[in-house]
Image (cartoon, rainbow, N blue to C red; front, side, top):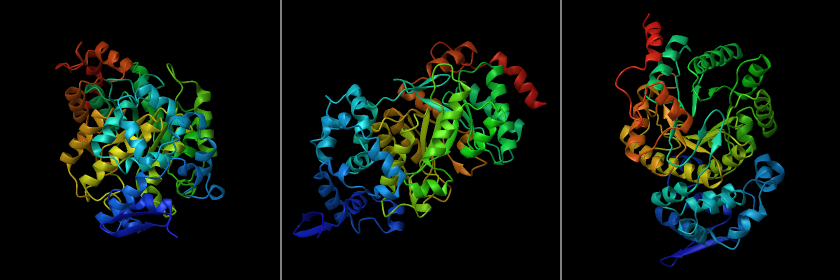
Length: 462
């Protein structure tokens, strides 16, 4: 017998399970069509959304989408659920939960108190019956603050990851990109390199390069080489200056296994980074990246829609108290998010769900060149994320990552977002920019090259 149903114009739409209901209520995206879990029509999708709105939140505590005994992510979600935090909303159904979130009386302290009581599936469910403006409004009320060498996520702040990737890991090319980004006010979230050559010796070399620049100019920021966690652990054993441990994570045990990780390995990485004691104002040492479609691409989605899988990845990230989390929203390609409209919806969903669960969420506002999207779409998503209180975005020279081969946001895009929304970098980094004469008292860029960087520019020219 069908578990859930809704009638539209005398036609009864039936849904056999909570998993099917969530999938068919999800706004259209190519990945769900590829997986064969999407609604067959817009009418069926509306029926699923209406049926989902009537589901009590308690249902999500009593029905696992992936069996408890088969999946350590499910076990993590169940075993760490805070019943006391859930109590204030335990009587609500999904539709009531949406109304409660949008209510002006539900303020930032209230959302902080209930975050540990919200499961990823609850967050995914309510997001499916929200408009874009709803996702923005609620996310803006969520405030998640983390710290390492500076403080991220404060009200009125928008941080950036300075991403100086190079197709051959050339030190001069990386240094030029770093200098460019710093002179344009980027780099407070992290200076993070995706290595082109992913071996431990190269990782160690890049870590020393980043550490030398940060130390020479006394930059209140943190560095990261975005390599596999096992490489970072080996780099730590070799005495490398590791600030943050990076790893891509997903929402099922099988998907994480495809990344070569499990939860115990993440715990080992966090413990190793904490043992170095390199933070000055905080001890959040993990950096996670996610993206809708990763579980499906690994054949590890267990019949779930890609957005619900993505929300489950946030339970994994939440367990390790990260400094940074971001969805690389359009990176996997049009097979999963076909066009600018789908990318925009996914980015706002990801940010909303993660913030609701208490994560310091940022977004790589990006697309691949074979997607039906362009920079205008990214401008719109960037602006909406800035309004929604996104913790950080990417800063890539010219918005074009020549190593990874995709389009993201540039240093100038970050300046635009800060100017139009009245935002500033992290306070410690903001003060450093003024001290180095990169910016003036109002936070505007000085027209003259900062004296401290003149010698560096001459060395690069040489």
